[in-house]
Each structure stands twice: as C-alpha cells, then as structure tokens.
Length: 153
Image (cartoon, rainbow, N blue to C red):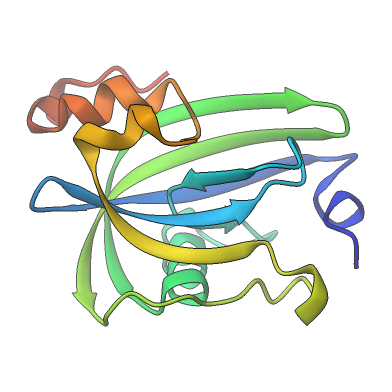
C-alpha cells in the first residue's frame, strides 16, 4: 500500500520518543514519502482512535526499534503541513526499560513499502550535518540538559 494513501489526505496525530543516552539519541532513517529522500528522525508514529498517546508511543517505538520504553514529559509539538500530509507531532522524553535497538517494521505497510531503513544511535552534536527532521527540534536536543524549561509549542 502506498504511504501517501495510508498517511495522506487527513489530519494525523503522531507521537515520537526522544531516547537520549550518553549524549546520543536513538533515531530511525526512513525514505520519506514527503520529500522522497532519506531522513533521520526520532522513532514514532500514528495514534489510533481511542488509544492513549503514551501507549501509542510505546507500541510504535517497539515496532520500529525493538526497544521497550517508559514515556515521560511532552517536550515539543510540531505541526507539519505539506500536501497531501497534515500532522500534529508530539515529541516526548522517553527512557529505555529493556531491549537492544534494531530495525523493526511499519505494520501499516507491506514488505515492499517499508519506510524504515536503519536504526542507529547518533551523537547529538553531529545531527546538523545529517538529514535530521524536524529541524526545529535540533536546538532543544543541543540544550538537552535544560529540557525541563523547554517551551513545548
């Protein structure tokens, strides 16, 4: 199934997890259906109707990275609009409960349409030199030790 038909033409609520350990963040590299390019981003995905955001994030994180997490505070909200996509993206601080990071899958997509290409720990200081999304999150990640004072939106 084409990612545009799965994720486009509707408002989508997304949740993503910021798992930072030893000045590195766990990221997934996807082939973006929006830009048609490879991009690094925090693991996460869509919230299903009736599903609490924390549970959705735990599910999505496990599906994509094989890591079980605990969800903490909301740190950043991003609205994304680029035809045919419209998403409100909520980024939460998370901590690892168990599991070693490895490439997972998107159950909404078939084997040929998988977006996730790689899962990797990346040092925060080099994110600017990578294709990282969303760009406004970079300044917060660089100032991670002050996250309790972040303005969410």
